[in-house]
Length: 112
Image (tube, rainbow, N blue to C red; front, top):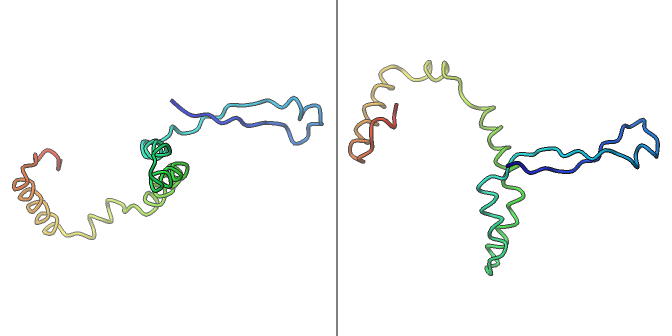
C-alpha cells in the first residue's frame, strides 16, 4: 500500500482561470518503512525520549534511501574483489567460515 501526495499541476503558460481550475494529481510515494512506522508509533508514549525518537520518523526513510544510494555508489565490483584477494586467502577464509559455522551450530547452507 503506497502513500500518495496531492500536487497541483498548472501549465506555466496558463492564465489565471486555468490556474484556478488546476488539476489535482495523486502521486504515489514509497510505502513507509518498518523503521519509520516503529518510530512514529513512539509518539504517544509518556517518555520524552520516546517522543523525541518519534520525531525522527519523517527522516528515517529519506536517510535510509540516501545511505543506500551511497553504498551502491561505492560497492566494489566482483572482478576487483577477485583480483585483490588471492585464491589461497579466499580458500583460508572459506575454511575458517566453515569451522566457525560448525562451532556455532549454523547450517553450511547459509554460506552458499
